Length: 199
Image (cartoon, rainbow, N blue to C red; front, side):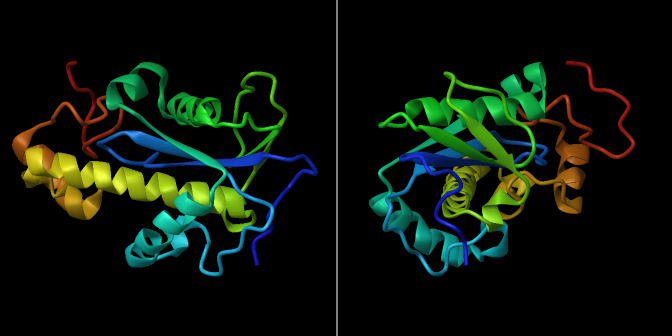
């Protein structure tokens, strides 16, 4: 069973990101403050849940949350500041959008940078330990999947509807055949034999 909170402070928020290892599309973060009486039996780390269950949980999480926010950071920013910094920036932007301002932040993973002097803790595998991080992981994943479904219509040959931009064999074959798009992360190793792209 996931724990509701890490600190003793009111309005603790959890934050997580999705799409860090993808070759295309944004890195997407979510942050959320849950009420004291929050319960949701199926909730877990989004990677452990089927797409169907994530889709089912999303509206329940949004309805029950005190506040939540989602941010997409585009490949151009990822290429400029690197994926770790982009992931942290996306989470920070979500935290800033929350109302009320959280008194404490719990972050999935082991890296974060302070934002607005709000105390925080990083928690490895936090999305399988704390409800707010798990809820944030579900929102980040579902919103990012929707984004990838949308841009799939623009470039169907990469099959982002299916692979969501991850480095599948099929996705890499499409890059080899059709080249890159504005949604590809040019700073990533898009092809195994790649030395560098001119960009």
